[in-house]
Image (cartoon, rainbow, N blue to C red):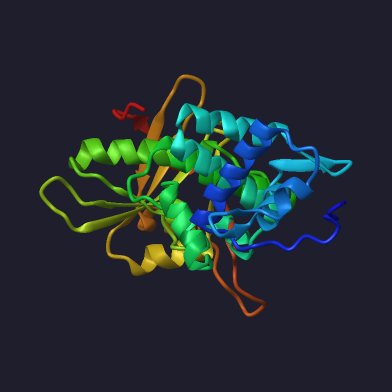
Length: 299
């Protein structure tokens, strides 16, 4: 009997579905089924094996040829991780495949930050992300890289390009602020890039008053570098009592930092007129060349 996969009925993502998909990969790898009919009438954790196969096929982990199921290279790679016991890596990779292959509605929100995406996740999708550590408050390079990589892929689909130098500058500010204040700043742009600033820190070691920081980074020479200010960022800068710009010039082996107040940026901001409102502007780093100093921060 030939089971047609021409019309695929996708089941919803859940922790149980991901675990059942791993079980299915093990079955196919171990038993070398001669026909899809050997699988599809079974159940895995109370879920139809046919549904699990369709889900795994959509995510790119399994396929079939002449009605014979087999693991794709991606499916084999996931199974290898499972055998090595690397649980979080498995879940992160499976979720990456799910997002990029299935394109759930919240995937288009990922370029705006993970909190923006989480708003549109179902309860089960959010549970999967939590289990994989992707929504953890304790940020690590692996988590940040996951979100940045997925965001980059999504931007590429819209002909956009992600510039990793921006994240390097943000990390530099995070480390700089740790040293300066002795406290852990909050990396806001990982959560959402719509809030108008990148890092939430404090005034000093003795003053816990909130300080908001917008980070701008370039790997060009100081004389050539520019930074981009949006009207949203500027609106936040004007309405906050403590807001600064960190300008990072990462050219060659130099690591220069200028800390600029909104008052110092103000002369370079355009004004609205009767024809409309400004949305963004570019300002040369060289406007503040006397403010740049060698950074004491080390990544």
